[in-house]
Length: 197
Image 1 (spheres, rainbow, N blue to C red):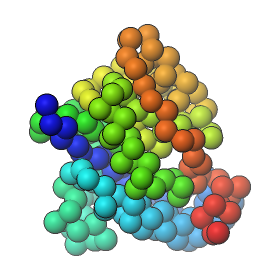
Image 2: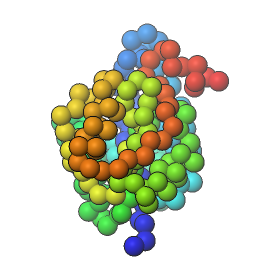
Image 3: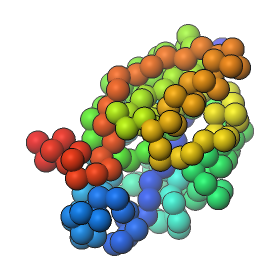
Image 4: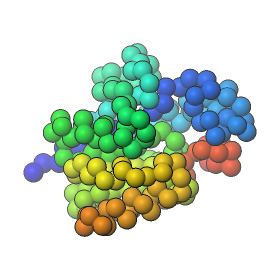
């Protein structure tokens, strides 16, 4: 069967005081927003060339005529009470449209490249799931060939156990997984040298 790829992009609406809150504690809201906008721009640049249909899920309201052209991005709003529920609902919605390989990314990883995302889809031809671990114990990408709801349940989001708990779930359910390169999410001031190279 022909692989039909979709990428889900989770973003926060770029509003002062609502993005990069951990970072804002040490560098202030204005600088945090500036960095978040830089991350959004980087994410758009690397996602655009990827061979997949693109779904942009906003944290709050859907925005028309922003940096994400409607001709390229199907725009949706995230639904759910926590990150797991929101990701699960997004995967459910996109798989229901007939896609055979779906990957989700956020907009916090300045080291992420188009090549890594393309590789994720290539690995899904062989593996059940693909995951991109981060140095803080989370992940920057998760890909599946069908919805496995258990990967979104019973997780303490934004903690160092998210990646290891997810892998445990995958193995317990006899699924295979492929690890992408480990990268850094830009969450705290110590991560900033990456973005200001």
